[in-house]
Length: 305
Image 1 (tube, one colour):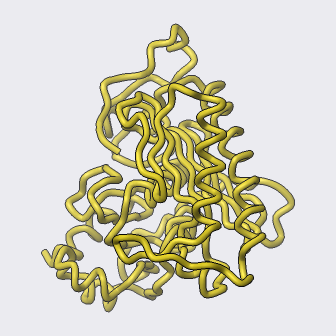
Image 2 (tube, helix red, strand yellow):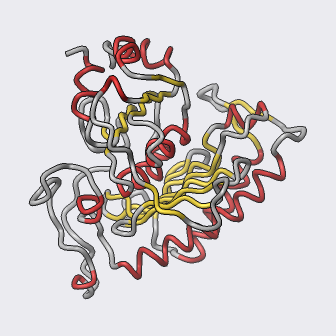
């Protein structure tokens, strides 16, 4: 996710929130109003794309559950990571749907690469985030689908069928969860208001990978400074952050499709995600998510400063 030039000029600019540069007239680089200022299309367009993404994830859920905890063929990719027929089937399905509905849109996916990479509107597809969990029968896996315009993520869906939960957002529309225990329908979600590191719960992917990356020399000390730390990796750490169940999420070895959907869910929930250098982007391989209030301090502590 990088800075972009301006809203899409389709004659309906009056339907959109006014464009602002990050933090301009808003007092901070996080929060629902700040997130809405990054909208690059009308509310009607964003709602349409969100409905499309939801339907695509409905179909993806069916494929994933059909293979989950079954005899599963596991293949090794050239980078020595694993892929299953479910990963491939889900991504093929979503690509076919996008191509049929939006032939001028680009695609960026984990399994089949990039098509029309210079398109102004692109879809990011992670067919099964948490493939290792999926392979081992752990229910923490999900399909991540996001739409980007001019480098700004506009719509995102995180669907976890084995948990029977889904999180989704679009610019200016808030962040929502559906399917959680005790919930009869969609509920608005928000990050926490915890403002002190000793009171914070910190989540992360692989602690070993973070430490050996050399990018966060203060990670171990930060783990000792917070109230509680747990290794809830992949998409789940970001959704827990967006729900207010944690104040920080740290990961390395990420691809753009890992972050595109979680970014908008967290930002619309009032939080913030950057890389370890504090840059707001999804393609640098690292991520620090926070409730916004603790972000600068988390970054400083991770750097060991």
